[in-house]
Image (cartoon, rainbow, N blue to C red; front, side, top):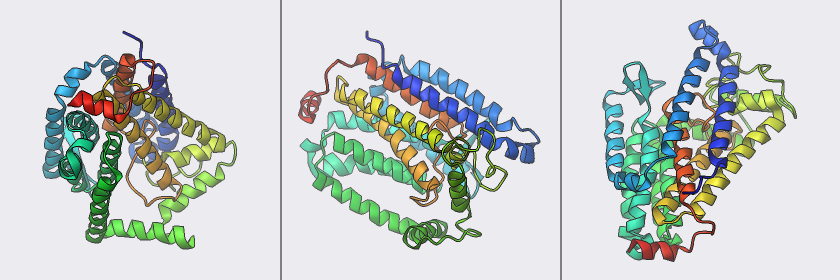
Amino acid sequence: MRRGDGWIPVLALALTAVGVVMVYSSSAILGITRYQDPDHFLTRQLARAGAGVVALLLCSRLDLRRLESLAPWLLGFAAALLVAVIVAGRVANGASRWLSLGMFSVQPSDLARMAAVVFLAWWLRRRPPAEHGLARGVLLPLAIVGWLAGLIYLQPNLSSAALLGLTGLAMLFLAGARLVHLAVPVGLSLVALAVALRTHPYQMVRWRTFVEFAVSNSLDARGTGWQLDQSLIAIGSGGWLGRGLGGGLQKYLFLPEAHTDFIFSILAEEAGFVGSTVLLALFGLLLWRGMRTAARAPDAFSALLAAGISLQFGLYAVSNLAVATGLAPTTGLPLPFVSYGGSALLANLAAPGVLSRISALNGDGEALARQRWSKEAA
């Protein structure tokens, strides 16, 4: 068997290394203030990164046919965990997103988003949307994914639910769904978004803050716009080369969630434009190698699985960066590989292992058109 694409694990590990350094830099003050230990978050991130590397190595040897056969069961297991977290999850910051398992806490939505990609790849290989029309080819698989997204939304976690829906739409498009058919679920999603904003006032406040900033450049810097204002101050003060690693000021409890949702702002402050560009280049290269793996995959399941994983990396990264720079409303989405987190980092490191495994089975030429996939699945 061919060796897999070595760039994929290297890029993932490089981003993880950047994350470990930036988690320490951005959280040391918070660790001293809250736990009297500047290394509190660093030691946990290192342990999670180690577990993630093990997951990456194990997934790089995964039996893809076995994974394909388990796809419906993985989806059911993920849904059960999401129900459990709604019923008995640990509440933090007004949301119930974590399940406590002894000394560990897991966020089931991280497993659910990966399980959804595996399930859609399994489903679409057997039921190409171009052959089954709008109802059975598009709306039915999206309804199943929408059910999973709905459970995530009930935590509540609108941003993760929305990105799961976007991933599903993108995978359907890559599988051959007609654009006119995809317009129907897009319209339904916009209606659902309007209802969500209407029924959750805090989300409406975030959207109103974003719209006011985008339209009139006005920001309530001492109220709802505090977090974004401090983020922009951090990014702007970095200049070309930054203040130097550890030299940032916004992490001195000015910028909330500096080690999680807004870790890019601290990186931009300390590494400047050059460091930020390097980070974006790493993400861009990983997305390119992932989509290249999808293009050369030997079958529809592998191709859609690789594309779905790669698109999730890209969507999460773009969303996080957009929030940090004021191009999107504030959400709770982490920056893949870089932000502090447990189950998210584990899932994000396992996924490049799957990509590496797929690339090891690929041929040298590009994949054929969607019609070939449809014939294989028939």
